[in-house]
Image 1 (cartoon, rainbow, N blue to C red):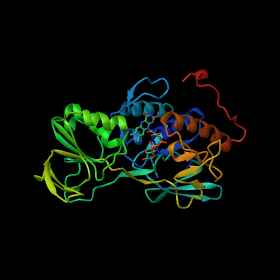
Image 2: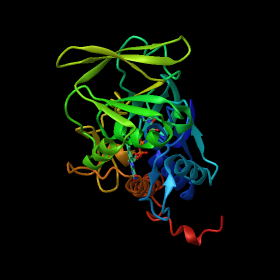
Image 3: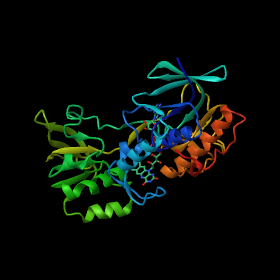
Image 4: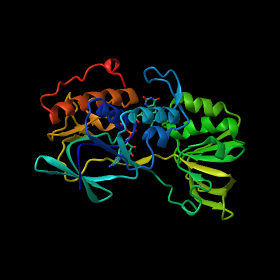
Length: 330
Ligand SMILES: Cc1cc2nc3c(=O)[nH]c(=O)nc-3n(C[C@H](O)[C@H](O)[C@H](O)COP(=O)(O)OP(=O)(O)OC[C@H]3O[C@@H](n4cnc5c(N)ncnc54)[C@H](O)[C@@H]3O)c2cc1C
């Protein structure tokens, strides 16, 4: 097992900024990310959307913002290991054994959990053809709009993601369908109104997808069934975007007895959990039972506070505040 002072779980925006801050405070750290890339929700859920509310960044595509954050996280040559899912954290003699992909890999003096909404996997429709055409016409997000150019696309779902995808794709698609299983939408009213005004969009309510068909290489049609009058029909489509939510598997580890509330890890104002040496920040952590401001900039500020407290935990003689970065000459 390799020794380190700090393990940071997750390389979403919070974990990446924490990685940078660990470098700033000269903490020996390793960041572990279960996915094969950085960015967390930014890259998995809205890579092509613009973000406007991060300080000093008036407007930037989420994917570019993630790249910038990664660049910043690497300023002190810190290690981020991808495809490294933390499967358990076991407290042992004042230290923590960190299990990665079910193997005991690291021994750390402190832990910072930046697991966001957890290890997320998109919900599937569970219909014939879905698995067969995955990535060959069946998608669970829109990573690049180019794959949809001049196509007829069925977007399944009625939440913000479904409507965001429709608005993103409509300008380059031939036609879009929004197919919702009941008669209500969870998406913002303004998005629903915009889609209703879009001449290339057709909204189909109270309808389930029953089957996805294709020619073996790509999707050609879907079979849909109306839940009210039980009629079925076939829609000719070139692609299906399934936007019916994510299965969230919160990264709260079975051997780590941190106190939780709802889906959050409870933290104090220093972002320390109920276990000494274990801290949490970002979307996964909450100081109170009030609704959380789940935002990139908030996670960054929390990571900053957590890392400075971790520095003091690891080196009690160190100052809590490490000084202004503008005083550094890197
Ligand atoms: C559609 C949408 C639009 C948004 N728009 C904005 C916006 O405009 N502005 C804004 O500020 N915020 C926005 N947000 C919110 C913002 O994306 C989140 O607040 C932010 O991503 C939280 O960062 P995080 O690092 O805490 O968590 P996440 O982004 O969820 O990252 C957590 C990372 O930890 C990894 N992980 C989890 N468990 C493990 C494990 N066991 N082992 C290893 N790795 C693990 C995950 O794979 C993930 O990469 C938006 C969110 C959504 C869904």
